[in-house]
Length: 126
Image: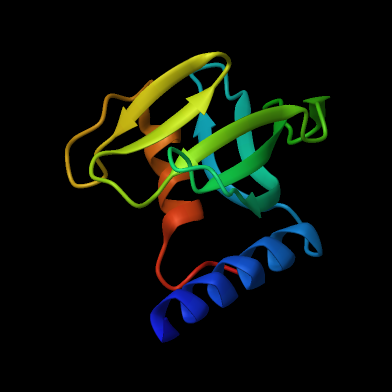
């Protein structure tokens, strides 16, 4: 019971820290034309579902070669994250993706592993 209480406290603190803080950048990728896309957590909350542990929102920011913002969506992308199983899972855009953080990940899928690590890190990031 004590471990469950500690776990719930950690989950609630993680959710509060993301909700009340600046977005937490979890992935940045620069393309050949020097366009950079940054993905950041804008909110996180513990879920009482068995299949997923957290519901999060993700903000995308695109900048050009000079660093000027060319696109920003302010956290409109929702995702679900499962931390308690291996492999973990990310559900986003109507699709479920398995995440195995200890295995090599393709360049196009690395953001999912980075999201999983940011949300499921122990201790939680702040």
